[in-house]
Image 1: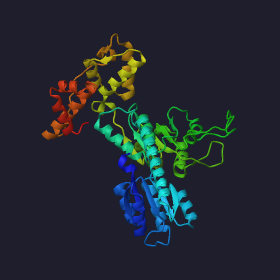
Image 2 (image 1 turned 180 degrees about the vertical axis):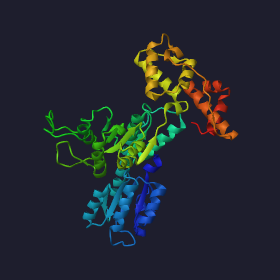
Image 3 (image 1 turned 135 degrees about the horizontal axis):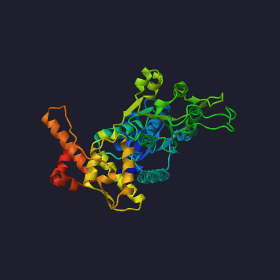
Image 4 (image 1 turned 45 degrees about the vertical axis):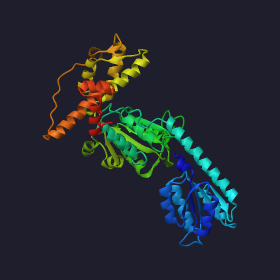
Length: 453
């Protein structure tokens, strides 16, 4: 929070004489004024005040408090952290209490004593500053929601921005992608970036649970619902109440259970197995699959109405082989992590190993790469992991670009080369420039021109 804002005051008063008197008595603060709701909202955006003093009786009907309460509501909606001090008449305690209940910081009776009003405003500023500092410290200690995701690929960067945009909503998100592409990492990032971050993130793999058990796993069951049901047990949906539920491999959900899931998505209530009571549940649904659900719906293996209910926001995650520079980038990160776990410091990848990693198609995506590097870290004889350690063979790869625009081809080739070079040398700009055969200033200029950071 900037120091300028922490001492900025907005005075909302339709009586111009009283407005001048208030401003004069509060000359120690940087004050702006407004005499009606519209001008107050304008000043709110211009000066971004930390504290607002306001009269409830404002034009066009100064004898009514409706315009004042409407303004108070808009100020709180604009920024709940603003401290609003309501100035009221001596016999207007009911409205003052109503204003505090709506979110006002305090109320002050007219006619006021300047010293007491100054003291109240000073306390409001001080509270605002303490709360701002507290939020700043919390942000410093709170990791980025998508910090677990490492990428330099432009497609993945766009996906990260999409995740950040949709996180604030309650829309159901469907993550599509091959196995091992990081769907659960993105789902957890979506949860951490949302207002539900303080609640539970619960994940269930629909393909890993036997068909006869998945209903009770999802919806829970009552005592005596079936043989062995010795006590009432909550399901995953109810456990995630207030938070986020990830339904992994949703394409493997049994067809007869899809209708019950659809009803929950429509009504937001569940019934436990063996129960008759409807239980309301507030949970954000994120689903993931590597299957083509549209094709499954045409084959009557997946309900079309359920698909459209789940696919409010669809995010298609590219495989690792399509992410420019990410294989080498992730490989370096995995080496650091597993070397630390194995107490083998200063382990690095040889150039041949990095080249082999870049050229491998990685059908198992990031999970396959992670397992490969873990094995290589354990099996390597020295501090350098070779291509033999990773167990991959290099091969020539021919790339064909359908575009015939030379400028676009050149820019695309430069972009791929720079990202690949940065991945190969683990982000070292000096080594990347040497590898590309250009000076470091030239490399910075190229990255700026191509929009690379």
